[in-house]
Amino acid sequence: MKLADRMNRILVEGAFEVLQKARALEAQGRSVIHLEIGEPDFETPRHIIEAGKKALDEGWTHYGPTPGYLDFRQIIADYISRTRGIRAGAENVCVVPGGKPILFFPMLALLEPGDEVIFPNPGFPIYESMVRFLGATGVYVPLVEDRGFSFDLNILRERLTEKTKLLIINSPQNPTGGVIPKEDIVEIADLVRDRDLIVLSDEIYSRIYYGDAPASIANQPGMAEKTIILDGFSKTYAMTGWRLGYGVMPAWLAEAVSKLMVNSNSCTASFTQRAGMAALTGPQDAVERMVGEFRRRRDAFIAGLNALPGFRCPTPEGAFYAFPNITGTGRSSRELADALLQEAGVACLSGTAFGAYGEGYLRFSIANSYENLMEALARIHRYMESSPN
Image (cartoon, rainbow, N blue to C red; front, side):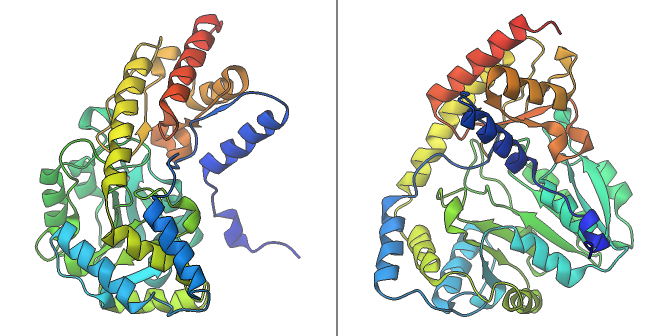
């Protein structure tokens, strides 16, 4: 037996590959500072943990409805209606184990081989992986530094065709931390409103921003009925291990996603959904404290990166990543990322882990302690000073 040909088209996520290498070094007794994985280093807020424990004690340990419990879906719908300024009901919500199913399932439901999908590059690698796996055609829109890593609207306009069936936008963005300005969101909506396509708006970092709140394209006239909002609990509430995400989308598409859910996962764990209810309806002060600490780390880490020889780093407006330009070092992204891990004990990602247009950049997660971030800067500085290149 051999694997099906489609498995040659599926990609992996670089962060987990580097994490594995870093842990192998640690097993040899090496000290490694982990700035490769996009996971908040905070504990899940206590009231959410208590809600999960209470749910277990009360017997929320059995199968639930495939799209999620009705009361939970209504809470999500109310939250999205309030925060995005749209009308959403429980029928628009699909609860899934993590955020990635809201990339995979809608693509499975919508795309035929040869259909075109436009997505950002550099961008979250699973976008391209799923497009390739399904035999669709990926069309890049480069995110460039001098536009604040927002879409170049002229390139987007040129690359929209009759074959375009899906447009993926991500704001705040992984890996750059860029936020699409509201005026660009308005123009993107104008470009696609009358086209036969769906917009997948990845808003998983919607609560982690440092200036004005990010705009959702679903809020634009006529766009709610042709937009999939991807959001979840992993980043905002430090719940990565709880595996709890959701999509808000037109009801006809939600039915299709539910059908794919029942064929794959049956349902999302019942007790985690009760914890998710507590997250959305309970106190939000832990989120505010976390974002405040990310801001403190961001400001100090960006300043430190800009003091390194050959580094230039814009200040990200959202998420918890730094995406420095390292072309001044004369090293390729992968070469420098590998050297920093092996020689300096700092795990980060090559910009090319997020697409070809990531060449010349590295990605650092600031989801580590302030002290570890400062130590990472010191290690990088010592390495850069001593490196023959």
